Length: 511
Image: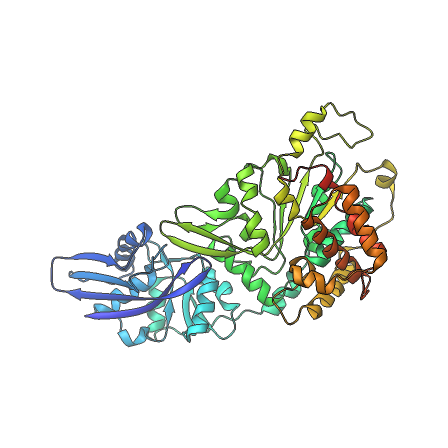
């Protein structure tokens, strides 16, 4: 007899429909799984048989062929355990096949028939809504994650016995409800605040510019000057995530298996800070079965690279294309997947190997050659993709003793959101959303300079020996400074401020 159950598989961060077909025939008892399964799927027959027996059902002493269609799509992971078990029960007439027709099913089985959570339930729910399969049976621990998708009925189950009882009508299950707006209201806050940072007004202003225009930034200063402290507070001044952005970010964490049952939606912007020993694959994604890397896990948020020169050069150079394009493609023998990576890159580094070259209170023991060699670890092409260079000096004692509080993250975020609104109106007819993403044509259109501003830029170009790309970066940052002032035109003070944040151009080599 033949039975069919609808399920799904994950490729990249998207889900694709899969039909689990089971055919039983009179022959020597065996189970064969076809349809391009990986090792975890092939092993599922042992889990499925044990779960069926341990829950009081029986495994028909027949030859079983399990087909996962379409056959040209690779199937990975244990999510097919539950649909296989239900299809086998239907094929052996322990469950009516018609009962399965209206449901899409995913879940991993324990040997006792319990159901364990699986990765990727959010993209599966999104795909189910798009394809019209709006009724899902999922593990209970995945219920919140799947239920954040409107228009889908999610039925959580704890065991194979409960799933069969529900499908046969012996037990009623209500669709699981989840209030997304309430989650946003309760968790859309940060544990850190910009008001906690003492002094460093120049650095704070640079990061406000970066947040307002979506610019990448690098901080240069001695150890203990507060670079990491500043970086960790950047997400708190970025505009709050929309529901669509939260879904995009959550999809990545879902397929990576990093979502917790009490965190079904990423309501705050991610902040990723990988160690400098992170491998190439760990940064950009990859592995035998491609998984998202740190740059994709920071999508719609901040990727912070502390001690930038200590990272492997190949790893750093791999970031150049994703920073520009907002996506990264990982190619392996098993296939090619594309992950989104629209990020703000924030980097931090010391000015020399010992760290005290710019610290007036500590003596630097590095030679000029050592300093140049240290700074040369950052290539010119990578630096050219960083709009804002921020000098972060050691904090003065009087600033540490100052009991006055600076602007809070909420207050700064209001400024940033006003500037972002100006940019959304400016670019509403295209795909660009921030000043940092402007093309050369858009820079010419929106960053026109008067004679005074042109003279300032000309002087800076000659004095600092800036590249053509640096010139474009200056105009973009100046445009953001003007937006923060709600100015329609770029004024001399905006150019001057933008030039101040190109301090590393003369210190680092151009290649």
